[in-house]
Image (cartoon, rainbow, N blue to C red; front, side):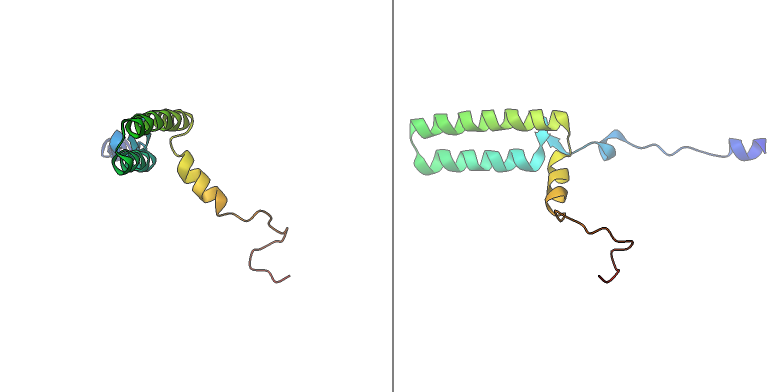
Length: 99
């Protein structure tokens, strides 16, 4: 019995495989989409005011996204799954039961 325990080994789980995918402390996809929208705003309008507005909007939204990720790094995925649920489920014993 002691020999069987000594032959066991542990598998390491690397931190990079279990961490959420964040960029600048916020959800990666949302930060990239926000940056793209700010760059489009800056380069389409091409005024100093639009550049300032685009930078300010990007900084504010990234700050809000960081607060969201600090609360729950997977909040976007949870919300996307949440909106796919029905608002009401009938009380039945099985989802395949006929009504």
